Length: 333
Image (tube, rainbow, N blue to C red; front, side):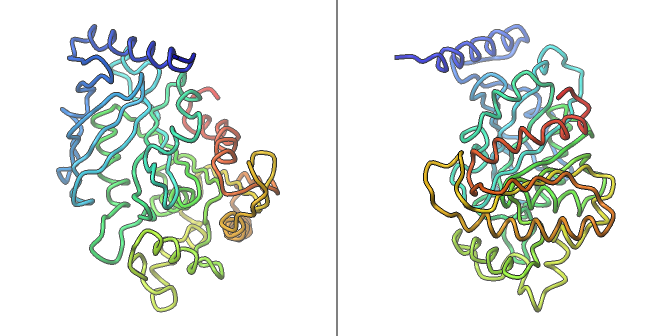
């Protein structure tokens, strides 16, 4: 039996097919596949390129990139702007939305566990949801592993702006390790992003206990000990180079939103279990806030007390941060 949601999805796919046919593009029944622009124009300076495009739903496009930095193929999910097809010469403000550690849904997680697809459906923003693997930590590792930072910041951005008409107006947001990634990228690449938002992120990776938590998460993904930034004592400078709280000067001029709970269950939880990851995130976020304010920054801060390290809170906090992100992107909230 079809639900109302099924009917909406079918209608969106039918509308997609109609638009693509009108544009002279080849389509299949559903999901539709066609060259939306990336197959012909999505090429980075180092040769990274789009090798496939597949429509999952109307405005929801999955692409696969062959990446030298990643030493292979890696997927990305895009949410296209509302007027993407009717305004073919327009460039679009771009929101990079990052997932967390150890999540099997990977680049699909935001659309699988939140209503971001429907929330962004009528907005003229290009949403980019890349993969960070199980625990890539939005970094180029010391060893020979995939270079996620080079891929995200250089290859992917060039492909998005050349192949999918992304503009140079960008914002970035993420949850948990993705919150770290959002602030780390913004700090390490000053001026690249107009705004950054973190939901339960690890924002001071040199807070006592944080290196142990990071290495524990990496081990859960079968990564070798100290293969990311080295030993946190012997290679402290490398850890500091990636730590948002150690690179506050790079965040000047960037609008910042950060939020976190305390790990205790509340109204959005299905049980009363305590979640230690949220407490760890809270300690690092509090440390970041203290250092940021001491450095003269004025982040928007929301410590909401009870709340666990789970998707219902991140969905809520994304919506709470949206007015700031929208303002930075130059679109209505």
